[in-house]
Length: 429
Image 1: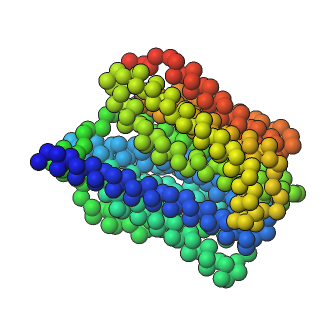
Image 2: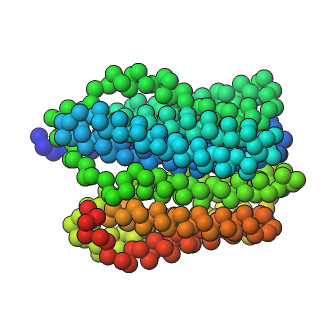
Image 3: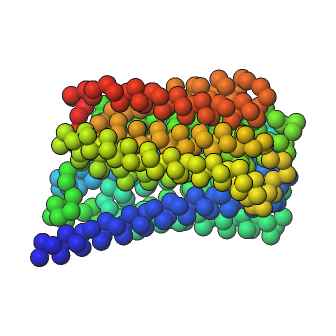
């Protein structure tokens, strides 16, 4: 009987994981399709602006509010497992969201000048970035409690709705021959708001899992590491910045050469694709690392890290080959790019994602040790390196590529140094 129950629990977990991962991949693909459609419908300057907005709003919006989702998931799941009321956890998520929204609006104001020339005014750019921050805040605030209550159908639906709305709007714009860059950016800015509008009432009617149900397949979640959601927000924001801002800097600096900027943005967007899998890698590795470190099995963690490193070395070589021989073809075919950066720039961008994947493995180990401050510090330092090199060095395209690689290397090195230091006993799992 126990075996059947365990088997059923494993099947449910596998199905939920596939459902959630599939919806997130679906949203990522839909965003890429919207960009591809925009590339074929707008001029090069317009496409560069839309793509840069996509990268900026992923940095400011998803970078900050994904941290609220993670903490709300943890807190709600803990309340459910203990048969406690989930309302305090939801209220805390709302307070964290409002605080981080203020940060997001400040960052939107600071980032507005990067898109001001492309959008016909800094005020327009700031307004669109602020709108995107608000809609993403709403969507992530909805998702956290749903995940904490294990309502994965509704959780996945939030991603599918956003994906469908974006594609439907892009198709309608093509039919109506909408040429305004601001209108196309509005697709990315407003699509996240539809899920909260559609699902907020069904989500509020969903009861929390009872204590009896929770005890069958869940354990109480430990309290957050010191710094809580804000260290997570700093980590995610800086990490998103490392992978997204290089192309934005190129667009801002090459307003007089939109075809060159659009070409770089195109290959940068394609070559950042593995970054979309980084959260899934952490989600898969984190439970195993946490359990091993909790049992004091550090040698087991080191063994897994070495094996993953060997696999990454092989996969990295393949990715570099694809960067040189396949990415230019894909950029021309899918995004109508007319100017492709030199092959060495593609190699540098591809290599940065390989180094970033290695950093993600090290990051997961430190997160398992509940040392978010060390991880956040590494990514913040990497972001500083990127900004200094990509925004100040010349010429813009090589500077952006080298800046992104230098940032990834800096993050990996700092995480390696942190991993050699013994964790604080008070933060151990």
